Length: 453
Image 1 (tube, rainbow, N blue to C red):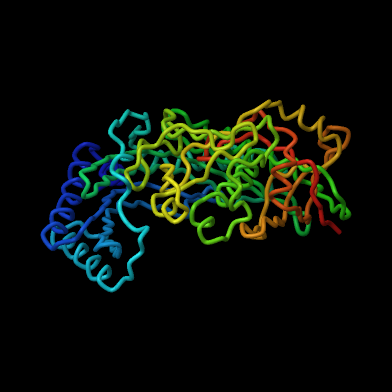
Image 2: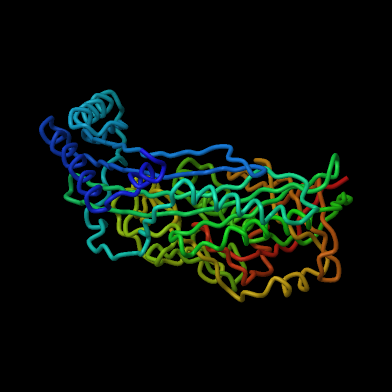
């Protein structure tokens, strides 16, 4: 079988595959009913894809995957058991239910266990335009990755490459529970990336760029991705060290979304009911400036995190998590909501297309507002505590003087407390990055400690 035929098998007939997954889930529910469980939920999925990595004009890796699986959770009273299997044969599905049942028998009851409330389950299933299957055969995938790297290496100042990639992924799933809910979901994802190196010896620098879209036709050209990776890499030539100081910090969009991600982690149910969040009991408080809002858009067409229902079948809906700087509510599953004495927010599995808004400005205006400080384009390290809010991470950045980027900076650590950082937001860029589930432009933070040489 040739490579193109292999990948063609990885592009499924959506309705047929969903029907097959639905049959497996129905078998799990039927088996559970026969052995006397009080409630059950099951999810079956199929994932397929192709990934190609090249380096210095040669193919390094080629991965072709096609995986199926089923996950089952059963409830005996308020005791819960969970099991999963990568084998979807009927006998394996039945065995999966039995193993979950055995686990539930030996698990202590938890009054918060159970299915999502039936009146919160989705009843409408609009099309979200997330399914755009396209055969990307091996030859084309290799050609695109090579084109990406080649365009990035056109500039003589690029001295080496960590490689370029091209990928396609399709995913299908069916979730059902014993309250009669059955939901189907499907999605595609296409991507490409390039990582380049400039300079030699101690002066070497690296940077990258990538694109990721639901539809192949929405991808920028591979050459554009490679050239942007080169531009960003070359801009890091001549990086300097700076002394320790306190400065305003401007986070580029791809870094700013991580900052927002820490906020979401701190208002998520698991951290809250464990008393492991610095934002516990802050609903209704002014955490951000009045001009900032954060809205969840789960029904966004072609959105990277779009979904009609969450991992428990609960209907998703547009909602404002931060309204004019005020935290309006948390991010909760059914279990975490019960632990907190609240209602689920339809966020089992996380947020869905969280978008920041409010007085967006061009990047150039934010640099002018900052006047003198750091423009951070990459962070590293794990120095973030959701328990205390302490934030300390290594960073690569650019020094800004008189509102203009002056030179690259290396070997610095930026530090502050997240609560102070959130309250100190001074600007939001109109350069919103929509490739991720958290969609934000650049974010200007008033003051942070910058530890340098």
